[in-house]
Image (cartoon, rainbow, N blue to C red):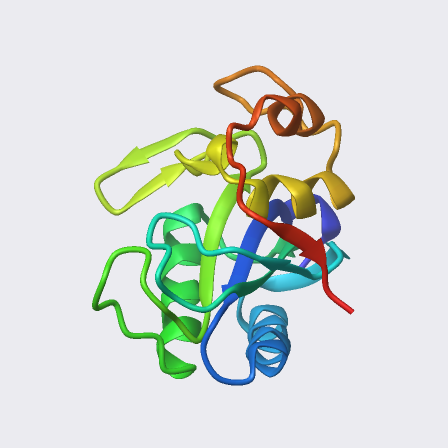
Length: 166
């Protein structure tokens, strides 16, 4: 596929069950096979849980992919298949998971669908998304809020712990 046809997609990955680093590695390999070529990758961060606090901490990262898929819904289908193949069970909102992959941005496209909202509707409230996103896309402009990643991070009310993972 020609480079001009590829879509720039930002994805957030997180894991807090099992071998977290291995879960991220396997997910990245599956994304390359089923979604597109990795263009850039943030550092990995150890983060406090968000939304449901009585669980183990997460390893999180953000990746930019040049997607060969035709649209965001096809990407969502591929991502959910990857999550399921890694044992992801959607039992409890914000609960523990082997792998979680969220679409943050699909270029500057806005999607409002009952199965998918892009940009991710809660990203501006989550340091575990904004810190790694700032590693690879500090100047990317949120197409609805009209502010870049650095500004969103500066305004983020999240006080959860986040540390670079070694």
